[in-house]
Amino acid sequence: ARVDKAGHKHFMAKEIAEQPVVIGDTLSHYLTDDGRDVVLPGDGIDFTSIDRLTMVACGTAYYACLTAKYWFEQLARMPVEVDIASEFRYREPPISARTAALFVSQSGETADTLAALRYCEPHAQTILSVVNVPESSIARESNLALPIHAGAEIGVASTKAFTCQLTVLLLLALKAAKDRGTITDDRLADILSSLRGLPALINNVLEQDTTFRKCARLLAETDNVLFLGRGLMYPLALEGALKLKEISYIHAEAYASGELKHGPIALIDKKMPVVVMAPRDALFDKTVSNMQEVMARGGKILLVTDGPGAKEANEGVWRSLTMPEVDPILSPILYALPAQLLAYHTAVAKGTDVDQPRNLAKSVTVE
Ligand code: AGP
Image 1 (cartoon, rainbow, N blue to C red):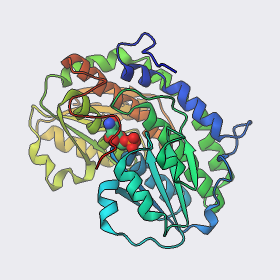
Image 2: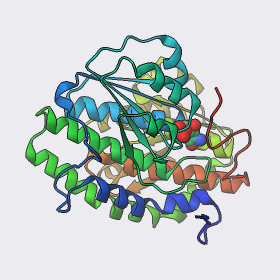
Image 3: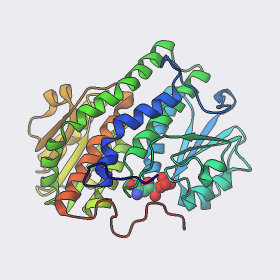
């Protein structure tokens, strides 16, 4: 079927706006009717016979894997290895028999990711994939393909596929935690209930579009932006920087907040905006002290946090964006929205070709 922009200026804007609906769809495919348990397609997978998870992908899908590593480790107490497909395939990594290998790809056709899958196939116990195109090569060559149900994604910069990938990966981590007996029934029920409430929170963020547009106008004036995050917000900082450079051509880098003083702090001056993604979670105070190090050197902080975080840490910051409060385990899905909206509006302010950025292809089917 032909996909149009449905009244939006760009496919990317449409795809950002669709997220409450498509994430709701994803959830409806992976939850029982009462919403209280996770169901996987086909025969599913039993994580009791699996000791390790190896996740491989490229670009945004790789950042989804990096996020999922925190989930599988924390919730399912499972050792996880994550790599970029182009590195993984030539490293000749040993794969033990009780390993599940998981490949994440929107298109399901990325050459390096497919090659990595073929490398694992003879060794791993099972090949899993998280894809948007169910008839793709990566899906076909997997033992179990988990579709993300995001619908066609046309914009070269991935948006809704990322948040749907995260949703499926979190559900899979919950299934693993249940199989391995590492999560209580109460905690599982809590997370599932927060997930069901997520589309409404995303709508709330979308309603603040004008605020993001105003902030982005300021970012459009700069040549360099740093993104910082800790824990689950670190992979998201990487994704925020990738989004911004892909479509606005502004040089952006991301660091784990704690790495700042090991080098990148040398870059800080009054021209350098630093986007800090930091919900008021267990690591918040540590991130705030990293923020203060930046401000003490004249750096400009754009703080993306929630109400309690803003109350505690807004002093001295350049700009602040307030997000709804959410269970910290889900924060990467919700905080993907400010990352996308800032990049989108910055690119629009700069007048770049948002849906077809220079030098990029939607699907990289050559090495
Ligand atoms: C994301 O905005 C990108 N354009 C790119 O990094 C993409 O995520 C990557 O090429 C992987 O593509 P895939 O998900 O189709 O495998």
